[in-house]
Length: 317
Image 1 (cartoon, helix red, strand yellow):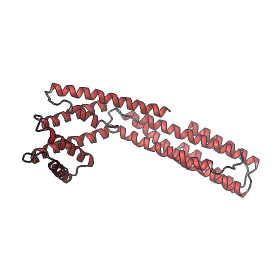
Image 2 (tube, rainbow, N blue to C red; image 1 turned 180 degrees about the vertical axis):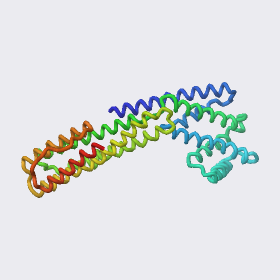
Image 3 (cartoon, rainbow, N blue to C red; image 1 turned 30 degrees about the vertical axis):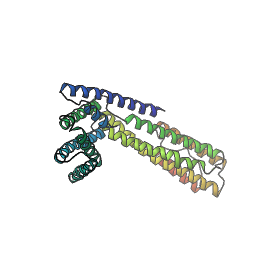
Image 4 (cartoon, one colour; image 1 turned 45 degrees about the horizontal axis):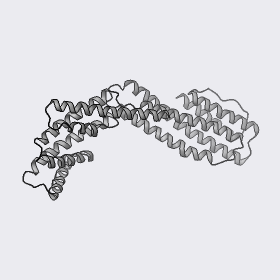
């Protein structure tokens, strides 16, 4: 729920920046004497992306596309009438030649768009190509400055919330193991289905959130504190992935133990309380040095004990 609120906040800031930058860029174009000030807000809207890095990449593609579009249109349209076949021919030539310069797909889109619009509007609107280039640059500069210095995108808190959600899910799975064991460990499907399904999916989503947060830090002028926080979140999530594997092993070992011979009441009580103990350790990110002692010669008991100690050791890292 908290994650949804954080995402909603980012969307609100995104809308605010788009509106603010559009208004400012329009007014700057008016002050500079532009005849077509709407071109700057168009660049603002197109170049504003979820992160500063993505915005810079799109901005470079748009500038490159506009420059190529203006050049190709001037070179190729002086003697050609504006018809369907000429539009197709000029787009083919302009975008095809751009490949020689190693441009990416986004730049090719922008080259095609600029070429088409200049083809249509240049004969009707005086100096359209020149103002398109100038106003595009104005819009890009305005949105990049606003995006970077007014509430720059930072998804670290969202990544932290994902970490907390995964930790809570694993704590509940340990508590669920305890209850399942006390009830005879009869249902063999529910636990592993949830672990391989919902829990694993959320774990992968959490790593994706960290990747997004790392991208949001690039070119962020206020990233120093958040970068340290994000590094800690990533370390803890790596720990949780290891603990996830151990919890699955707990389940598999108990299944094998119960299938070979029935666990005693003392064994059930010991491991049920141990799983609760491990859940509390994970909940608080603390690890005791030793587990409670139980004299037992079963190989399954020893395997569980080794994994339980490894669980606690991993929490210390």
